[in-house]
Length: 183
Image 1 (cartoon, rainbow, N blue to C red):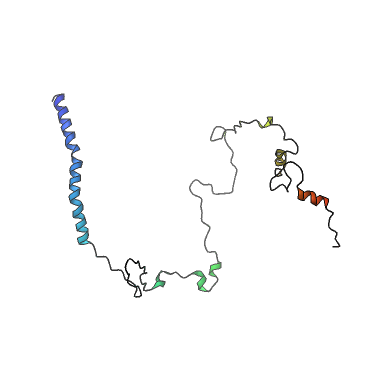
Image 2: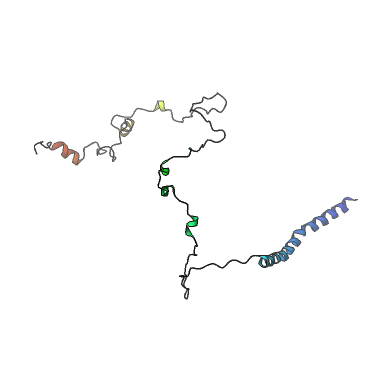
């Protein structure tokens, strides 16, 4: 067999296979309606919904919502432990769930070390050299924050304004004599 005839056979065979999905789609158009007709013919009829006796008929362009009549509404109800009349609701009868899964350590809490070279994090890489930073000037906001105080002028510093001068209320409180205990 020559190369030319093998090439022609390959091209013709590929073209024949390429037409197969199109033919399958045509057959699907025939099968779909047949399946729908079979479903309608062999399906069980849907039961008619039971409407409440007091459900009014709908008027023009009016939507009426009615709930179906339940024969026994208590059939879906489970009696509560509170309704038993005893103290069973005060007892704990269960165990706490075990939330540890596979690979989770079950035992007393421990601190594990690190073997160099095996899953050890590298030391932190600081871009700022903290040893080169100057000390905060006394009385500055940085100094106050370092001592655990709120910056001046904030709502949490006791009312000291940012300029260092006491507020009018503080000045009046300092100038006024303390109230006498006699009244």
